[in-house]
Length: 274
Image 1: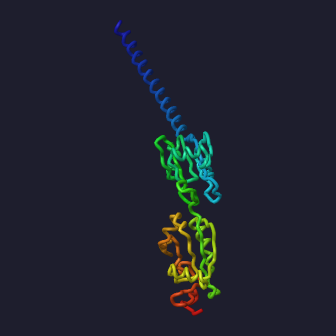
Image 2: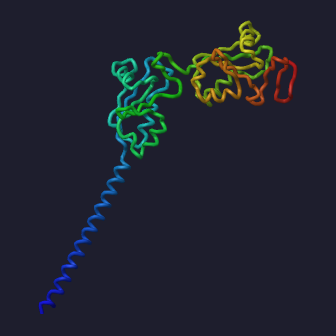
Image 3: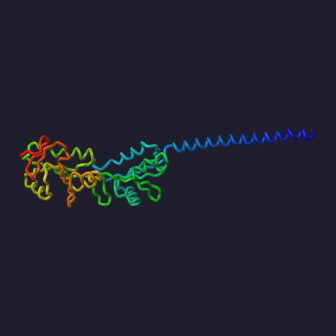
């Protein structure tokens, strides 16, 4: 009789254990789901950062650092604080020295800039991470202020060399549009010189120019990396840093003069004497 009673009791005990294990499994599953949801929400949450903009002093032509700030703010970030200092202010000077900043504008980013949902964006900005965890973003394309020399970098002077003896030759000022639109070149000043003038003949001789019209760019053009790479195909860079355009044929069907032969090159025919 006792044996008959013990069997049901044992069965109830096993059932209880099974139910307990089931409850634990359900609880663990629920906890795991809640944890995964929380982790997913945290991963998708905006990265919390702090921004400091250092602007150049008295440089109206320099790139506006607020453009970079606006670009950052459009990302999946929450900006906890944002402040701006000029390079010559006490705060700006301290930051420049502390972080070895050599160009302005520059932006310092602190916080979660390495969070997965913004990591690639900040990595594409080619910044440098400091020992204290601050990301230093320095301007890479002109126009900017070189803080080591105090000079503005990237303002180019252009000399358009024309030929008054060629009335229908192309206008070399059109180079400006190409340089601005394709390479972002900024011009400080421009002037036009007639190849037949005393100064024009001196330029032709100094740089062995054989085609006119053409354009001469000051050595500041070297600040534009893409332009320097492309210039190898259409011109030369002289020892004094001057950029000389030498391949008028690269401009397409335009009229220009070959000074070596004295011929005027026209798109309709190979040559024709002026």
